[in-house]
Length: 281
Image (cartoon, rainbow, N blue to C red; front, side, top):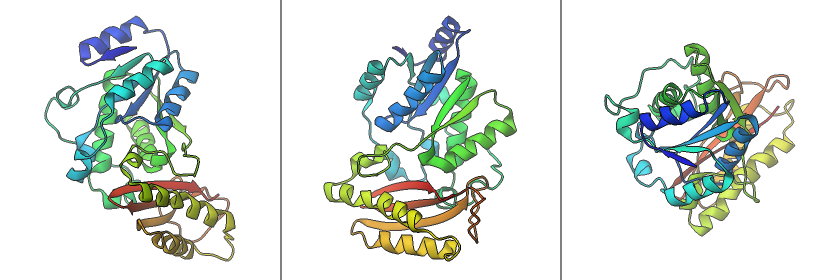
């Protein structure tokens, strides 16, 4: 597996396989089975797969969160090597932000108005800035993004369409632990009791979805009941539970079963912020 740290090394590696289909998986490291499933998906669709590992400062609005983000580079590289990944891109900030750590300005057509966009100002601008910079440098044929960060996936699709990037965005289903908790690098920061409690995020949401009668329940009632159940879990404090149109990400006022709709949740579990989402219909 090639370790690429400069533009020159990247250009050379790309030239060696310029006729082959290239898949790209952007990560911030601290790789888990969810990340590796994205790599496998890329490998199934492409001749070569490149994974980036870069913790992007401009998408963190909480300095403490950035400082505590896990760094497991050695084991990350071992895992990618064992999978037969073709290359890993390990850029530094100077390479990605030659003019300094500053995000571009974007118009996401309202996709950033709710949920993560409302509570994390600048997050999506930072994310989109670094992703488009990767597209510029790497020129992949396709890029894999997980549905756990569904709002991020929607925004990347929007940017690719508006800016005419020649890259196919491929969604990947959420990978879950045996107890249902959505896989996340942040999970390794949970204390033992918090980790046990965190499983209730999926348990509560999936139970509520399975019992939902859209003719008898409003989205607001559904959201309140989910939040109430989650807030009863000792380690958990709910930030939001939102039922949103899966295309516009606007909150829905009524349930329409022919409209693709998802429930999104963000909670604070101890000192760790976790997110999840499930389809309603």
